[in-house]
Length: 80
Image (cartoon, rainbow, N blue to C red; front, side, top):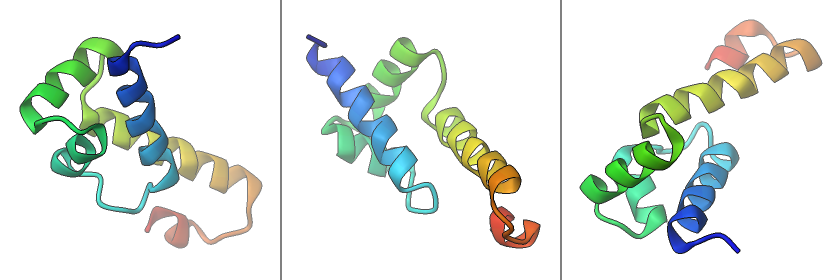
């Protein structure tokens, strides 16, 4: 059974994946984790090895790459 910090990290990662075009600021992600932004940033970095901004960028790029190879959407639409 994961500890409470792991649960919060998984909840935030799911939120990032489910809302890639939404507000994914550090403040919003800290709200999802129910922590202060400063503590959340330290916890997330320690547990994942990347910052929240890096995780958001990686997730968005991953979703865009999937769209590029599996849909017929125009590149400009995927980039937006």
